Structure formats: C-alpha cells, structure tokens
Length: 301
Ligand code: SF4
Image (tube, rainbow, N blue to C red; front, side, top):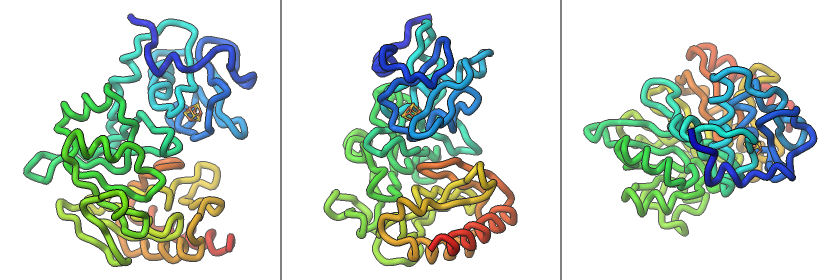
C-alpha cells in the first residue's frame, strides 16, 4: 500500500466542502461541477447543485475502487481521501472497458471541462488504435495507452474537447480528424472535414457532421453500434431518454435539432458522450429515444 500521490494530493482538506458527509473521501471547493465523479461512482458522489460532494462514504471494496477511479478521473484534483489507499487501484483501472474493444479513458482534462474521451483498441491490420477526443496527457495513462499499442488516429468531435491533442500527435505520430468550421486548419489538423456530408473514415468508422453545439461539431459512428457524441447528445437519467443541452448550444439550437433528425438515419446501440451520461439500448430502443429527443428539442425552441 502506498499513500495517494501526485494529483491526488492536490485536493485540500481545509477546502473540504460542507456538503460532504463525514469520513474518509471528500470533494474540495475547487470542484468545477463536471459530474465525472457522480457518473462514475453515483453511490458515493452526487451533484448537490453547482458542485459535487460525497453523499455516502465507500462501504465495500467495489465502492472504494470506484471512488479512487473518480479521484483519478477528476480534471481538477478536487477529490481527496484522508486515509491511505493504493493509488494504483484508481490509476490502473483506466482505460476502463465499456464494451467489446471500446474503453473510457478516465483522466479527464480541465481544458475540456472534464469532457470524457474514449479509446477504440484495434490491431494494426485494422488501422490501429483510435482516441475520440482528448484525455489529460497524464504519464500513467499515456504509458498504459502505449502498452496497448499507442494512438494511430484521433477523432475530435469539436473545439471544446481537444485538450492535449497536440501532445498525443507528437508522442505517437497520431493523425487527427476535425471539422474545418471548428478551427481544424488553424490547429494544424491532418484530416480536415468540410461540409455536411457523411465521411467514411474506413475501418467501420464514419464522421457525421452535426452542427449545433458548435458550427463544426462531428459525431463518430463505429461498427454501426457505438456513437461518440461529444456535446451533441447524451442520456438523461432524470427523463430516462436521450437529451441535448439547450443552454450550451453555442452555434444554433435550430441547427442542432436538424442535426439530431439526421441521426435517425443511422443504427447504433451505444451513446458515448463527452458530457452527460452514456447509454446502451437496442437499435429500436435507441431510435425511439432519439425520436423523443427530437420532439422534446422542438418544444424548447
Ligand atoms: S470529477 Fe472533480 S471537478 Fe468533476 S464534479 Fe467531481 S469533484 Fe467536481
């Protein structure tokens, strides 16, 4: 056992939020309310308003492991623990398997406001590994990704969630894909997407332009099963349906509705967002949720 180290100790017990229940784990006042902890470990963390806090101290090894994963994933190092824990329990859990060869990277970045990024692990014969949006360029994560084969491709959904794209490009020679309307040329991106037509990226991957949250927003579809949705689409546990975020439709809510309707033409079983909850359903179930989402969006014009 070793004490929590490096980023873990950035949290400060003297800034412990009063909303935390008494005990070992806590959130401090530097929390930016990205909701990563409450999504990853909902039995321990909750969003109490404009920040998150511990509502229940881990009571078994599974909950402790999830709390330590949240501690590692937190973009601002705002989660702390008074007792000593093995830091590797949280660190080595990432990339975290989701389904088949798709992983959640953890280690979110403050530069992306804690946006979630994903890794598709593929053999070199299928084009190699793909990173969707950017995690923090943390040494522990980069080493683990390197051991899994590095990163051959990086698919960037939009300009807010690109964080450490340049560091991954330099470290692994990663080829990046992004839409022109989100500044891809200025950023020196290798594959610049233009217009609104679907782009076949090969290897069962497609880029679908979905302007709305930003002008150049893209979603990426893999194997007609996994839809990586950036800030375009997520699951709402409250409404038990798919949802979009009206208050952050920076470019155009009307365009976002139109882009959402476009997605009805595609099959998928997973929604994997940058912000908000992920969700799995049958193709038919997902289509029904998407139709409900479009109808709901039209009431919010
Ligand atoms: S992961 Fe960190 S920044 Fe995000 S809500 Fe939890 S404590 Fe706050």
